[in-house]
Image (cartoon, rainbow, N blue to C red):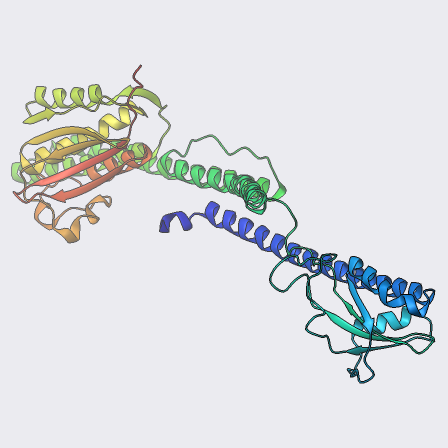
Length: 452
């Protein structure tokens, strides 16, 4: 779960999703508040208009018929009766009383009063609706007619509309959230795709400096990033080639004077001195050859082609056995991979030669694990101290107990092997065995053929 939230795609999705939901909630709240305000204004206007029409109509009714006329008010959400002489007046006037005072002529006097307990009681003409509190809050008014008659009118506002519109809120809410989620996922994926392509290109660049350049397309910022990445790749490739060519030229040009020196040393009369000088010269020539091999390992000009890994390892082990080396081979991976055959063969040969040199025998075992082919090469040598495991991959580095030219070599074999492994997208690690000896693990990305 933690790795999921560390993904940039997930973060962009959550920001879009939560942002849109919050914006929608704020917009919905503002719209709903405005809707409630407009409905309240319309409800007050409608209530004032009903009371005003009732009062104006009552002016045309004879005095002895007014009381029977009061029963008609219940049908329009009001109750009317003659006010008692001691009816109290409430100050200040309610908003409804003020609106009614503005609606009626100036000859009418409208004030607020206290509502009676029976004002909100349901009647056959106006039954109770809604909750236990009826349709709303009763408001009592004292209206003085032109002839001085005082009326007690209680107005029962119409039932307020529900807080939410009348639709299936869970269904429409779920559809809205689903729609927002789909849009956010699409935008997040579209926005993060160029970054993923750039990250994949950077990873591939570490494995293959000759990879195809990124296509320069999309938005202006993406085109600039792709062009900068392609320029960086071109410069790195140029620097690597220059370094490899310089090293190859130096080591190649040293071969000629070293050969002349060897021929001249053969003319030295002192046999003991001649043998020492020849041995030193042979060591120098070996270092020159290893330097040339190192330059070639850094140059990835060899073409990639699909090959069967089991056959390649089996062939390398068979060649070692034919050369008189103690090498055993077991296990299969049934995988293939895109590789440079000569370079990968050199990598395996260096690892086996290293095991033979220090452990006198090599046990090669192959296995497949989650998209990677594992090639384990074990020996029975002294192993490598923990502090020296990373240093042995440095060029021309040798352990203190292997400085002898006869057993220590030039310290370049593991460097070449690691360079080749990384060029193929793999890794090379060293582990000391509990029973003694060293295990070299070559991990390469490989594919198994699809089965019908």
